[in-house]
Length: 335
Image 1 (spheres, one colour):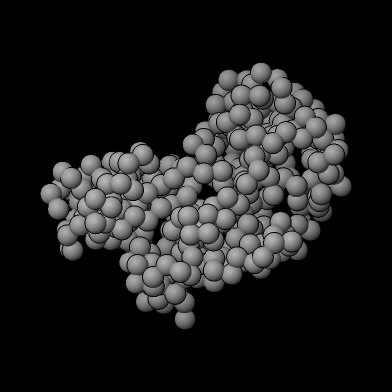
Image 2 (cartoon, rainbow, N blue to C red):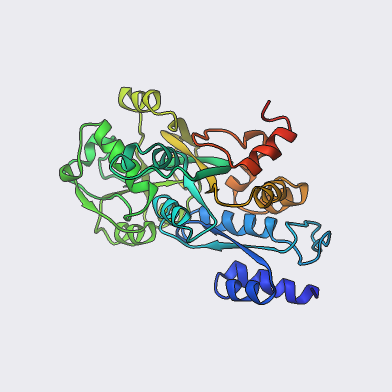
């Protein structure tokens, strides 16, 4: 395939508009990566990983930047509503892969948590653990909201239906003795919540994301924010009872004028379906951890630089895809 044509396909893939048509026309295999909203880190990280796994149509051919990808594969990052929606799309076959919070993946696979009244998603498989995500609870500066219990009676965005943030917001509220009825709950995307926060329509909002989250960073610069700590025996109990929650901290200076804040977090996982061919997932996993892909990741957001092979199995509470497992065994990460 001429390099210029392949380059155009990759650019179309990154734009997420015509890649599927281009891939079919060129007899390439599309591999969709469901991400999240454009304000979060899932989307830019998805673009980097899609580039890393995308290969020339010719076996052994590599790109000018030195990365080779998987010959004949076009990675396609796709905007989505978040973790819950991504699990549903992977389960139905509407997408080949996606980014999912470790807690959502665990619940879906085991039929627990928010999936306790739904069929288990037993075909869910992990490709890699990417980076830790923080549960941000953002309040207006000077609002007097100093802890989770101070949300009582306040107007709070819990994020949109289908998001992992909404599931975790409900868990955090419950841990501190609150329900959605105890707050004036709003269910909107992070960007919409940021707009409402800016004009004073809401007092606070939840967001599960790696830092820095662009929408939160913009609010810190423009109107001033406080990050509310999620700490105390309630947080300790959450971490102790659930294998997917981990202690977490947002360092000082990540958001303008905001000191270091202790919270809890989850891991961002890249997951797929057991229906995906073993050889394909093996090659995709190898491409993700290729040294040239490392250069791509290091050129992206700070959290992308935390995507390291040594942490590839951290916080994974679901089975690995056999193709990924084969790669990690070869690298002696699995004995």
